[in-house]
Amino acid sequence: MNFSEKLQSASAKNNSLVCVGLDPDRSLMPENTDVFDFNKAIIDATSALVCAYKPNLAFYEAMGDEGIAALKQTIKYIPQGIPVIGDAKRADIGNTSRAYAVALFDVMQLDAATVNPYLGFDAVEPFIQYSEKGVIVLCRTSNRGAEDFQSLSCVTRQGTRPLYRIVAEKAQTWNSEGNIGLVVGATFPEELKLIRQQCPEMFFLIPGVGAQGGDVELTVKNGLNEEGGGAIINSSRGIIHASRGKDFAEAARNAALKLREQINRFRPTK
Amino acid sequence: MNFSEKLQSASAKNNSLVCVGLDPDRSLMPENTDVFDFNKAIIDATSALVCAYKPNLAFYEAMGDEGIAALKQTIKYIPQGIPVIGDAKRADIGNTSRAYAVALFDVMQLDAATVNPYLGFDAVEPFIQYSEKGVIVLCRTSNRGAEDFQSLSCVTRQGTRPLYRIVAEKAQTWNSEGNIGLVVGATFPEELKLIRQQCPEMFFLIPGVGAQGGDVELTVKNGLNEEGGGAIINSSRGIIHASRGKDFAEAARNAALKLREQINRFRPTK
Image (cartoon, rainbow over all chains, first blue to last red):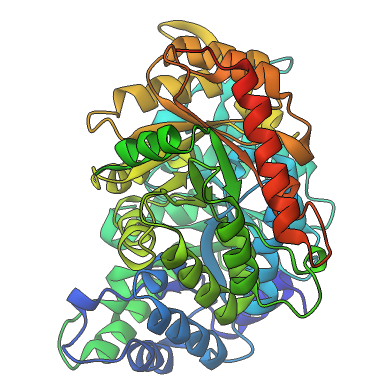
């Protein structure tokens, strides 16, 4: 099963577009909790409610060897049927990007990875060549600084439009393997709508609901494809750090349940 | 000593603008050679000839835990006076980029890191806050795909110019700590000239001489600052894989010597 099939299968089984961001922050965890044990409890509590998990590598790398070990254990522990997206935002020139693809797909055994488009096609190509894996290109990120470059008006022969739209266009032309998706932040619902119109069939990874303040209703109305899917709606802190107490897993389950309901309320019924 | 001072000191001591990219490729190494032992031999053979070393994290991550261990050993082994640039091309939204800065500067103990500008200021800020460390922003990369986005004409109130120039301008406005540099590929000498005119005082990390075909004379004439410095001219494969045989360290020394001479021939004499 390739990434897209695995995603659709998990999404259908759990009736969910929720992705849980496994980004453990020690200062928000119960004291003296092992990172893998924390993730394990979160996964046990939420695996019937999600379409994917998304660990961000930064949090594990910041913990050194122990963090990398916990990440690997976590990836292995996630039930087979649920895809794991490595939020890595990697990219480098050709042969170096190939090494990153090996690191993420072969060594870490991730099902998909986020990549940064700034270096252009040859930086993304080595990821695309893993046709079974998902390659999720940063398009319009959810942060404030996204405006600095992504919104710049770019002049091309086809007219003038923001950089993030040109990134979306290029990603479409690169998508011969059908394994490319886009990162589009929930915090920019109008842009989300435009990018969905432009790319009706791509899957979108949509961060920014929850702690970052993105609106769930607008995210669902603007971000889904015609079949009411094609979206991976991520919440990290809002779910995994819903409680700092010993009830953190139960609180995470409740937060995931609530987000799934909020999303499904606005999904078209089939 | 901050990064910039350390760089200038090593550069003056070794009369060199050469940076050796420590990007070991097992298929180009003598058989059955341990990665750290390989790097150690390269460092022993070249440490009197360089201004910096630059390991690219991708190659180590692709080797798994063993690679990460070899990278850490390598960073520790490099003589104190020579700065180590982590070519990581990281960036993420605010609190996540902070975790990457911790990973690179605190855990890995690197002196500088390359960062990707696509996510904007808040992705770069956590790195800048380490005022003793160097933060090297991708501006015009040396690869073919660089054209895809970096060369797009962007319209702003100050006129129309390529994205990479706007990145350089923004990097200047972000440079309150004086610790920001730019990555500008040697394969685009005209762009290098323009960016140097625009940023007369920033240090540039210039990859692309050697295996990628960048011209040394043009790199030196276009890339240096008024004092004949401010440039870190990187060669990776061209030095460390100059020979696949047991003489690889000697061959690396000769290649580094040659590159230093080629560069110094065109540097202004003080």
